[in-house]
Image (cartoon, rainbow, N blue to C red):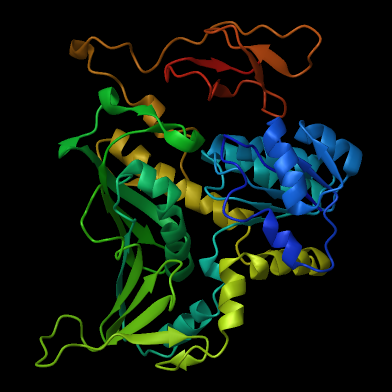
Length: 427
């Protein structure tokens, strides 16, 4: 197997590289990192025999069976994953957020379908055995009628759109699991209590693309008939305790706190009926409701990605989908971008999947009275880079851009160009 990292631009994620050292049957054959010092350090850390500055060259020469796409910066994920799949890699483990737009997710799914590759996204919570116990509680009627699903981000300094991407993606992934496919989304995005306009749109950190706002509120109609909500407010003073989701039933609540131990608690009783005594928070562990954790080693392996990696290997051997596969990752991206799309459309409910496959914030028109440029700038002629097939000059900045694998006619924007209005079509 091989590792793709990028020191200084997302590095090696949250342990997506070193997890392979916990898999005895895996042989670390190579690592790629364009940063020389980072590459040397990674080779030592991973005991890799070979190192490359260009991950495409590594894929071509080494031909690994499995690859970890580690950088946290999401603008690199689609290109890296698709390149690995086209090079013949059987299984890819990719850091979250999965990618930046539904269009990028479409490319990854198409590559998987064409080449038969398996992709797993590094959302660890789906690999928690407790999730199966919670599903049984729901199926057995222990929570009564499921009334709503409430989700929240961490609510730290990143509250709003950044929180939605970086941490909310974990929550939406679980929301999808328990609520079924999202059907519609309606949402509002705020900056300091005022509705977000194009003047608030900025280039997000960690390669997330256009972001705006420090507060947002989203409402989803899910296929199972339940309403699910997601809220994020910057510096919400909850000390991150709200990060996760609640399954609110007529007979009780299951509170899931992402990446914590125990990961879930049951709060029994009608949540709307007053009680004389405080309601207990009963832990849910792999041993059951109210039981002490009987397999702490397994929980440690979940946190350190070992369970996810073993599931990916087995998925390739058994020709099945990983527990958190590319389709699940794509749906999370769809749900995030649906928040932006609804806000751009005046907070009306938008259907999922989205018709427009780019980042909807690019379509947020500036107020002409504000004196800013129009959000929809006229595309310019795009010229090829001589001697570099698939590379074209950004018509605005004249900087070469890698457009390999992107269908002709697609409206794109160079993620390295800070001006959000600089869009052009692939020749």
